[in-house]
Length: 451
Image (cartoon, rainbow, N blue to C red):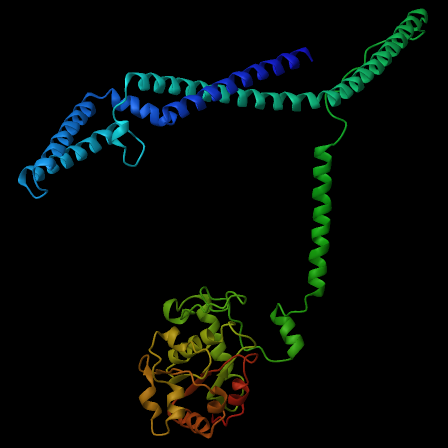
């Protein structure tokens, strides 16, 4: 509180000095007739040699002009010359004043020169104004400081309340600590008084290996259980799988005569049933005629002859159950096997949906069976592609929008009859049974037999 009273006293003293300075400044401004800024500018102009010299010349020209105007008329050359000189000096004074005075606007000529007394009063006015401004800033700064102190003083009651609460907590904590320390000392005294009857016979031994887990045993059990589970799953899959896997199963299910068994050809289109890519099958009888696969095709053509004892089949339609089972490869290689025996053979690609004979024989497919069926004027001989003296190929041609209609047409029946008259054997490559009914339609076509 004593510091606050000293602070108030200091503010009161500065305010008293500020009032005195402001009173003196008002009195000086009234006596001089100028503001503090104007007084400073007048002093600066009065102390400028250039301005005072130009002002003296200006006053002399005014005196000469006044004398000339009493003697001459306004239009006289002497009067005009003095007026021009007067205007030039006024412009010069204006430029010099603007270089010294920063206040915009014209400066009256009466303020450009001040007497000694007025100059002293002006200097005193400037000093008093500077003192007044300094005191005003000090009073404002002290007022702001006092406001800050008052704000801090307003927080003291709340801080005192928090301090009392902390002191109470400290007192309670200290009492608790002293109670715990006393209890600890009592426990230590009791321990020293009681002599235990237990003693260490031998120290415990640390095991060199962990009791659990037994990794080797767990791994062995996992392998045994995995093998048993795998065998069980394999047996279950085998039991649920009802697909045909062997020739004997096929004979038992369908009760058909097996004409031959064709081994899986490397690069044939039956390699993968899940992919949609068609790989071109190889002509095994042409590339490797002494292989076991070639002998399988020769066995197939021999069994076809013995299929009927009194006649042999002259036209044969080759199909499959699903795509990519190798029917096109069988057709092409069977044709080569028949050609080896000197028969004239025609291979007809009747798969108008996904033809492949032109890929097997590497022939163009611009003109083929579909073109002959669509254009009655076109001869089938013009669409034939020769692969030797005894083998001809009729590709599928352009894929039509309605293959089934063309296969079931009378024109197709006529072509088959003409083919059988011109060739010893006609092998027709038809679409799979699961894809379309074209193979069934071709099977019902009239086939000629040779007795």
